Structure formats: structure tokens, C-alpha cells
Length: 59
Ligand SMILES: [Zn+2]
Image: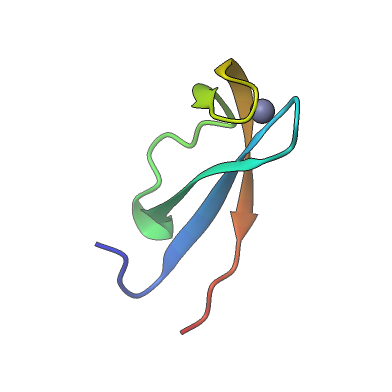
């Protein structure tokens, strides 16, 4: 899964700014990169729009 040149993305709640989910995708095969997805925020206890923020993870 997360091998090589994986780009990590953190999804943050647009309301409380809590990191909801971290996903990884391959930069060479990034067909569709969504910028905003509705996810459930445990903090707000409702579905909110989450914004993607790319994060570098070198290991
Ligand atoms: Zn929230």
C-alpha cells in the first residue's frame, strides 16, 4: 500500500479543524484527487466537509 512515493493527506474538519482521517495515495497514479469530502467528525458528531491537506512523511 503505502510504499515509495506515497503522498499522505490529512483530512481536517472544516468546523473544528480536527484531523479526521489520514490517507495515502500514489503520486504517480493520482487519477482523481478530491479536495473536499464529507466525512463524519467525532468531535462535532455530524457529517462535515473535510478539507485535504497534503503532509510529507519521510521514512
Ligand atoms: Zn469537527
